Image (cartoon, rainbow, N blue to C red; front, side, top):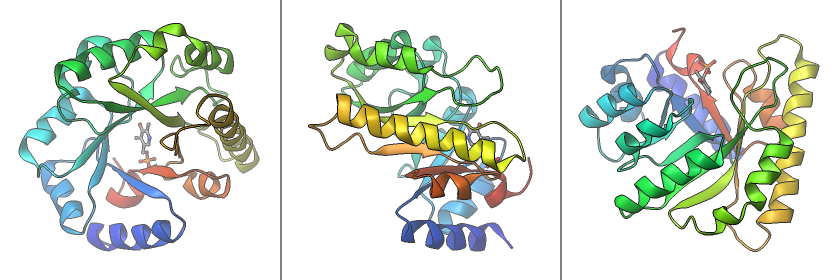
Length: 221
Ligand SMILES: *Cc1c(COP(=O)(O)O)cnc(C)c1O
């Protein structure tokens, strides 16, 4: 199937389930992204700031760009003028820098807190204790140029579906708990970003609201 058909088919399937598609276009050239754009896709995810900025410059300005990869504080300034959603916030320090750069641009930047749910020992993502600590931090109250929209997680890269299901289930419970405990009176804490090409069907079963698909749409990288 070509990219346009694949985009349309998946979007049909997902919109019935109220799940938002982030088309992960990392490593793909602008022409390929334009093809997906022409098929109606507007949300694209990239994991490297430099690549993201290069594509932002040459592609249509109504694209909503999401950063899905690890973000270093010294790179925030390059995306602050235009980024729609940052999925990978994993420290208060980073959140403070995003707030600062958003203020300079007269913007409020939407962010997700990345939670470490995989068995793999990557250094990215908050554990439960760190998450609660961040949410309870007094400094958070003063950050008026960021808005925490929800949580994001990456499951273990394994063919063991039970394990993946358990990890996504745990993240969904955490999301529900955090919503009740910290965001009860607001309506914007509503994004649970989980699921990639290999495991998005499990993520949807477990209650995600946003999936991040690359190879399913664009072929292997
Ligand atoms: C690359 C990437 C994806 C998409 O992966 P696919 O397996 O190609 O769907 C999703 N999320 C993150 C954080 C990624 O880095």
